[in-house]
Structure formats: structure tokens, C-alpha cells
Image (tube, rainbow, N blue to C red):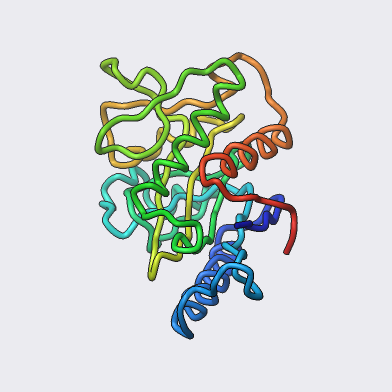
Length: 235
């Protein structure tokens, strides 16, 4: 089974969301046309597309989120040069911006052979393994998806947020890994709805400025391992 990676570079949120939706709708439509092809049939090994992107500053609120977790008004957002979108993923509010690697896998989980819970765990595992390459020990917190630093302590720090949507086992949205992100942006929200937990980045944890290109390569490698799915450059 294989998926194709598209590196979009820097792209505004709405344009990327529209692209996700187009790929997602095509994947769901394909499921409606008939059963999964038998192994060896034309297209049977195509699991979907993985998008990599950095966004200009934007806050997104998930479908189960609470608007009060955005701590500034529209006028303040405009003054900061940030956008806001209420979107159709799970989870609460988060920030996307420069220095953050956002990964949107639009995948058919039935073709890969996993369920949604296993999929989210695979995303977490890929990120945990990626940051381990920088000497960072990340882990999980029950009931709070994502990758966390010091998950067993009083104030754990989230290094990666996860929020997905699925229909007929086709996914969209994904995860956002803070690489060299300016963490001050998170002070305008209660990240993921939490008031008692912090946020961090690879740069903040290591005191270095990791290469975004290197992080992209690690993320794709570890995501392929976690999903047991080949991920190659393509369209």
C-alpha cells in the first residue's frame, strides 16, 4: 500500500482547506462506487495523499470547540494579521503559523487496514518518533490526543496537536508539529481548550533551530513506518 506526499510549502489556510476537501470528497466518492479493489487490481494500492504545509497565522476552532477559548476579538485578530476559521475537524481551538509543520493525510483507512483510533495513535507515534530524533522525549495523555512533553507532570507541554475528520474511513485534517513556531501566538487562546497545560516546540526544547526540510523528511519516514504504508513524492 502506498500514499503520495505533496509538499505545498507556504499556503493560506482557506486554499489548503479547499484542496483537502477536494481530495477528501474524491476519496469518499470512490468508496461509494463499489468495494475496495482486490490486491493487484488497478489502483488497489493507492491509499491517498499526504499534504505538508506551513500556514500564515491562523486560528482554527473544531466542531466541538468553544468560542470563548479564543481570547481576542476579530479586531485584535486583524491587527495581528491573523485569520480565524470554524472548521469541521474534531477538537477545540489551535494555532497554525510559520515555523509549524502541518500534515494533512487524506487517506483511506480501509485500504491501509486500520480503524480511526489506530490511525490517531499512528499519528501520535510518528510525531513521538520524529521529536525523539532531536533528543526530545514525548508521550501521550489519556483523553487528550497529541504529543506531549512531561505528560506525567503537573503542567505538561503540547508539542503537536491532532484533530481529524473521517467519513467512510477516509480522513482529512491531521496534525500540527511546532518546529520553530513563535509560541506567543498561543497566548491568545486556550490551546485545545486547556487552561492548565502549556505548549512548546522543537526549538524551545532543544535551544536550536532545526531545519524544516529535515523535519518534513523525518515526519514522512516515521508516518510511513507507523502506518505501514509507503509514502512517496507525487501528485
